[in-house]
Image (tube, rainbow, N blue to C red):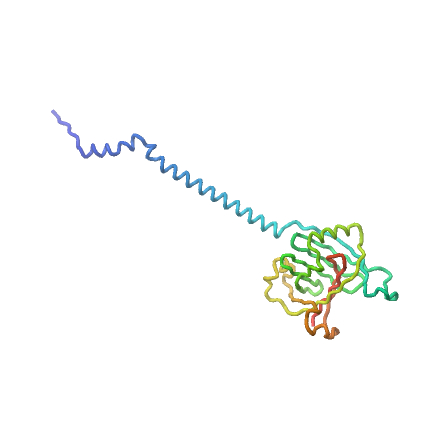
Amino acid sequence: MVKIAFNPALAQKALAKEPAVKDPELATAPTGMAGSTGRCLVTLLGIAFILSGLIVGGACLYRFFTPKRLYHGAMQVRDMSTVGHAERQPYYLPLVQEEVEISDSMAVISVPPPRFSPGDPAYILHDFNRNLTAYLDLTLGTCFVIPLNRSVVLPPQDLTDFLSQLKSGAYRSYLVREDLVVTERIENVEPLGLHIRKLCSGKDIYRMEHRASLPGRSMEKRSAEECYTFHHFENKFVTETRICKA
């Protein structure tokens, strides 16, 4: 006869493994749930990151690439300093023309060379966010920068409305003069902002001030100065800007 015997240690090991074999779902369910939750969190974070990128990118594109409106305007101008002097009155009123490109934060004026009066062609940029105005003399290839004069330059929406009125014909107005003096060359162009840096890229840039605000400069002899003149309008009157380098 053959006697069959069982090892008690092996029997205990078999019993210990038996629950894992009989119910495998209980053993794997917690691990599967944790993995699924992690994948959902990663997906949600990815979607949130993409949406935030789209919002920030859209804001940047709107700020720097907003649609611009282009206008052409003309104004007949009378020099009020000649009123009362019949012999000095012209036979016709000089016509000042320009093209203006307007966005929510700036206005760029293209000044053509005048036909019957002295003056230089130029680009004039008003940056309403930086509160700066830049004049680019196209003949010299030089930029001049001064704080924006909001008492003279209409804000973008008001300027848009005024230029829309000029479509019906030339507007008769008067002349206002401003006398500017170059004070120093600008070496650090970062504070000028993106728009002025783009306009004046590769050009010499100088800072200016109004002559009347400089003590002692108003009495200097102007015959020794090198001056440039631009005729333009950003309001219901024409401005004659005279820029002088001592």
